[in-house]
Length: 333
Image (tube, rainbow, N blue to C red; front, side, top):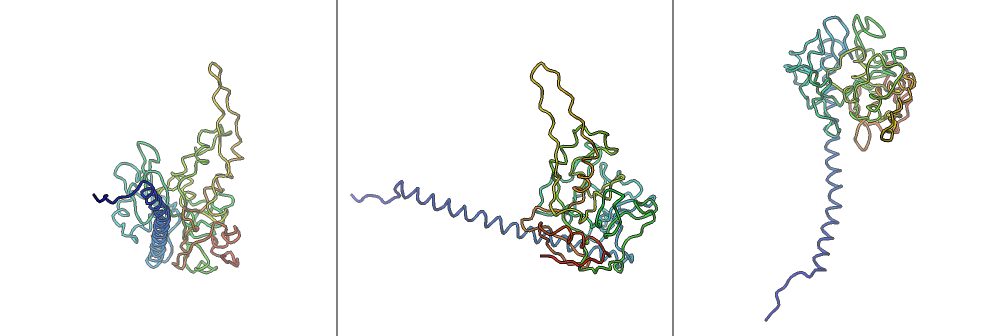
């Protein structure tokens, strides 16, 4: 009788090994293709936002304010751009006089706008609980060019594209939005906006730290600084960034609470940490552009083009691209 053909155990193991190798080669390739598609999608988002800025300029004769501080009209530049990215209904529903109400139940700030979210970025639930049970806001992966420095106020020169405007603006009351003719360094040499990340555990660790004196404004989770609808005195720092620090710069210092005491022993109060040591680090972190793309960080320039900058780009170059009339000579490797 003729023996039936079939695989031996060794042959089967060889086939399985070959399949495993092929899968191991295929997965990175698929991931690479997916990231390339995400990168293009992100760049397209920035392109649409840049065109929206130009459309706003064509209509109003100026770019939108970074954050308007006129009584009865307070909102970030992203809100001003909503009609130009097919979000007219959201724009019409906006409460300009009381920004926080936009985050309450049924408020327009809860609407997630696909154009404002990079597909590569990791983020918390979107929309995000800014104040659990009361305020909820969609997040944005893109922030405006706030100039050479956003915080602290004493160092804010409003020398970028987006800053506070209006009668109550800081640090310059009465400041007016930028016109394209104000960009003396050239629109191809000046950022309009760029990417930003949504997570920083080191930042969040300071929420429970024994800071002395306590900050005048309590530290909030890092994700809340990426909201579409920032409000309060530091709103401009939550919607704009600067060329002050390297791209993808994290919070360089975190807080580690003391270990719990042995059973039966009274815990020792943690050692107070001077707020003056931490505040400058948070100011710098809040201003950093960044992304999760492997190749760098995408930016839209004032001429409407989109370009990726390498994380190793020197701070001097970043600062040059962040100012609109600094007179610097710029160059990117």
